[in-house]
Length: 197
Image 1 (tube, rainbow, N blue to C red):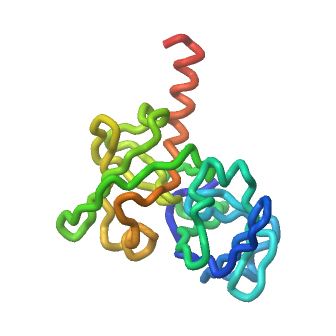
Image 2: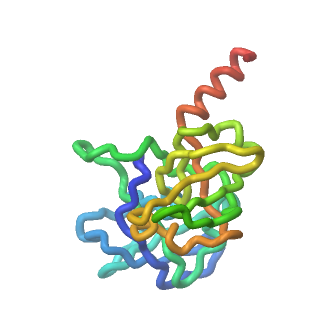
């Protein structure tokens, strides 16, 4: 379980191409304290540490994950939002994030608004019903509050701190984002569906 509060911007330093490619990611995390088999959310995708050396850890990505996330776009020098799992006693600052990406959204626009930047995001059609004004959404692993929902898109404001501490500082229109909808909205929809409402 994650919270959507990013702790590091990692950088891919190597890609080992194979059926299930291996990504080598440089991080500021204290890797001596992270065991093999531990989970790290990389741009919102929960991945398993399979190897580590110095300040670099390796993750392997399955074909299923490649087909459902932006991981197929990743290459050398790609910047990734990184978060370690929530542990007992940690501050819960964002919202409940599973690391199981629901789909891929597109950055429709990026417009300065005061000191912040207003992003307009186009989610997959099947996920639109889960997105509500003032509700929570996870984009590339970042817990965000939805400002407004308009037809096929929604808006989020990114303050300067978030621009500096996540990859939102680099995102441009046309870029693809991993999106995970609010867990509670998903379960509520399922419950209503089972009751025929």
